[in-house]
Image (cartoon, rainbow, N blue to C red; front, side, top):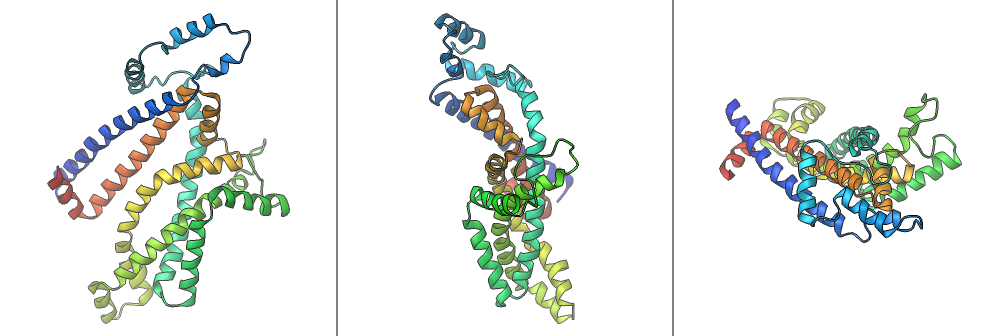
Length: 323
């Protein structure tokens, strides 16, 4: 398809993503403000804070205005890059998120790479000889991996490798010296990657088995191509199309799984900051984290749509017919 056609496809995806993000912002704002308590709950237990002090804080923070007015004011500030200040320590929300964000992105990116490598290797091995005992073992293990809760797996890994064997640190991101940073990454990445790799193995195996029955594979075999070359060079790239969609759909689960994993391993990322914000009723930080996470998830799905459209022109044509 022409460059203009690809540009139109990207533009059509963007026009759908922006209203979606706007709707999510309304939903998040409503749910956060409908939660029990309020952003000033932390002050109510202080005997030195009078009702007059609470009323003054509400006026200064704009909490005495109607909820729709509060939302519009927050949205306008959010679009301009002003995400407000923490109700707990007074620091800018953007500063707190940028402080914790790299740790979460490091964990997610590392787990994504490890999970993809494991899924591609084991999924391809299982599809190469689907009736072999090794293929059945891989399939059974992947079912087990999906069934095990992430937090339970993290606790078991901590108990075995940190407490009993003392091979790896149990929590944190790095020691004071910072020289053993990779060691702190092993257990949380393993916990997060095993769950998603177990799911993706099944997609790779099923998609590759279907691709190996395609006419072009049969023609390659008839022409004398080596089986491994036929599998990895010709069949596997075609079989990866469905995996792109699965990766985009699982990105939201990957983010939520990172939140759980950070809590188990005391990983100083956005997950632990989210938990602290919920416990302290720090609404401005909570809104910033949820919106940043939603934007990241929508961006991942948008990237997958664009990549899928670039790889398969039929998807672009379907998108143009819908618009």
